[in-house]
Length: 195
Length: 195
DNA sequence: CGATTCTTTGAAAACAGTCAATCTGTGTGG
DNA sequence: CCACACAGATTGACTGTTTTCAAAGAATCG
Image (cartoon, rainbow over all chains, first blue to last red; front, side, top):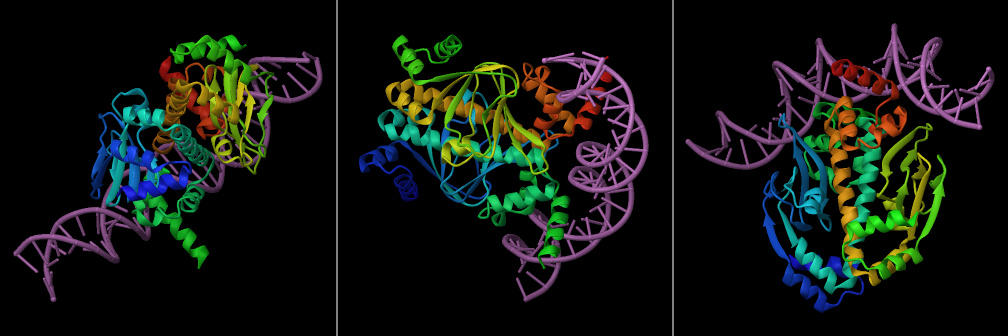
């Protein structure tokens, strides 16, 4: 499982030495997850940076009416956490679970801070990851406030071509903030045009 | 103008020495902005971290139909940039301008990276700022996909009590992704209840 | 004051959500 | 191997929210 992370880090952080990788290995925890298994529950504190080595995770919130709203998917080679709880140390309002059987590598905040002290290039890299994510989420906000349901759907399948076909339709709907039924109709409208 | 920044840094980064603050002063650029003055135009590269010492900034995108969609406000003691362009070095798709007469302190990416090397606590602090912002924007996405126009408006005035009364209604509408007219009607509905 | 800029109003139309029923595929246990 | 349960997807009718368009009414600023 760690090899995926190792290759990712070597690709993303060119100057990284073998000793530094081994240091990271000694500080991380690994976890295999079956489908639907939870990694963070509402009420718990998000204490880890989570790297996805295999599978697909989702961050979601459960509303009072029981509906699940998906705020984020994290595919292989991506990082996730609940930034709010991670930053504040307060209980999270979100959940994280596995959409597919998955494998993750995790670092507690304390350990990762220590690693950044010991591996200077890691600090810059870490900020880059978060900044890149911020760019993506800003784009998403823009779609949310400016686009129709159909445009949002098209944008989603273009932005995440490797995700949309792996998840059930109702999760796409939940991610877009659209009802299942509306999404069904949108897809049929598009299918006619495509034919 | 720098005093605001100095006080902010002393509050947020307790261990910071006077020499380190002076080092930051020597690396920054300052700018006074009149209302509507642009700080980043679509097509330019977002090269700076921007700290707001006074006033209020907005990040927005201009759609093909000419509408402006506001993806973010940055009040005093906040940081902004276009993360996508800042990260990639490619031209930005967004604009940043001043909603009020403002004063900003800016660091180029190169200079800030250098400062982080020289001031270790700065790296951790910087990541914290970005993480805290990520938490806020995640909450916003959740509102976007789960809430009605009225709920979004209420959430906005609760989340940003110091911003909503300083900006024209149509900017609130633009930020929420709602038409001006709808927002007018929502406010009147709420006003009746309040009376 | 005159010119923007901003806000409100009303009526019609488009859009998306809800509800209830049905359909489809998948997998499990008898 | 079949029957059944279950999760997921679709359909139609209806309802409700939000947008659009057009016009007019405040408010603000030089």
